[in-house]
Length: 300
Length: 306
Image (tube, rainbow over all chains, first blue to last red; front, side):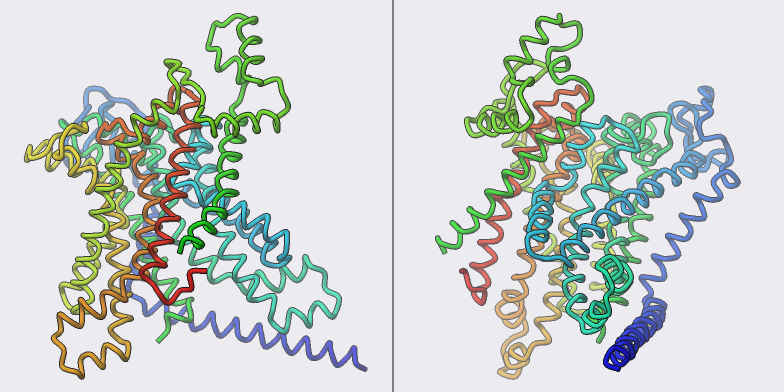
């Protein structure tokens, strides 16, 4: 009888929790729809994603074909963004390069989020010495200023776009882990988690089925903000010659080769820079809007 | 206060040890035999073995780590593979340049950020507010290395007002400092604005207004002083990004600082130089954080120092 009652109570608690989630989601969609900055950011991101998908259709020329007779041409009707020092069409290279720049951004954030979430969940749920070890390790990772940890990793692994993805991903891990740890600690104290535990659910089920879905909001906000930083960092590393290698049309690498022609053909550096800036602006706008819509403290 | 500083110093010891461990382990990941890399191409088998013995590379990993730590405490960061110069010597030449760049950049971050933030907050939702915040949003989104190239193109190549590259005079500092400080300034401006708006809504500001105090006294004496507390934290956090950012900006403007040294050493696979550079930059960052933390507590007397 008591067992039945507790099952019913737990089911009630879980249903109530689910209801709260559903209502939060509804209010989230409406507030993000009303946030002009988030809408503009979202449109920019969608345009860039379409660009990556439609690059072969939209690109007027092959991004890799060298045509020295047409090298260093200023923007014209034939070449909207001009041509580079090898006579390649800059617009076509930018369109194809979007795949690399966005791809590195998304993959590195996914990498950082995956390990960060896992560490944060474990530290927040188990607490005690497990938390101490994980938290102190995260402190150490955060003690490296800016992209220096990424630089150290690349110096060991060697310059390449994949290694840049790993390096940028690694330095995102502590940021995700910290947020997830804090949220996990809050949620695990809630009544319904106790109820589920009483019914015999194991830690794995509690962590991944009952805690994780309830801490998604801060993870999503962090993810969106990190994408902006990850794209900037990856482009920066390629600019230094430590990421994508020629003839890759990655935007940071294009900027790097454009630097040598800043006196004679500044457009070689200007266009890739504009593309990176608008994309980062899009993620920043979207991230700001997401945070406002998901953070209850921001609601008036 | 002294107790607080001592306590924080004790707390950063494990972080510093952790940083040395990470740097040590990352360098262990370098593919290939370290002794062969250190000896250089074409070195004889005997030379490689001699070097392995000398550097203790045949010892177990933990012993190697302990001797690495011991050397660091004695100020020995190894020798460059390129010119066999002591790493610390090279770093001591480069570090002041990077610190000078960082100092002027943080100056721009604070001054520009505060002015922009106050302009925005004084008349919220006005044209000046929206304008300043749009520029700030752009400032956050522009890649520093691109902004640097753009400024160089406009002010050095087209207008010829400032030198293109190098680090000889104050004129050389202007563009790199703006390039590096702009992103931080944008963040400080946003933070100052939101912090000021929050403070302006408080009761004591309403009381100050009711007392008939002049608006500028209210803004600068009452609102700004309290709004500055969270801004100090943001400036402190900016320093890390800024120190990392020197890597890019020094490369754009050909400045022979620590950041450029690290990048050049990665290209030439001069591992001890990379190791030493990253370690020193991280240590500087840890100590600056301690300084910011202390300042924060000095400004915010509400926080119990112990």
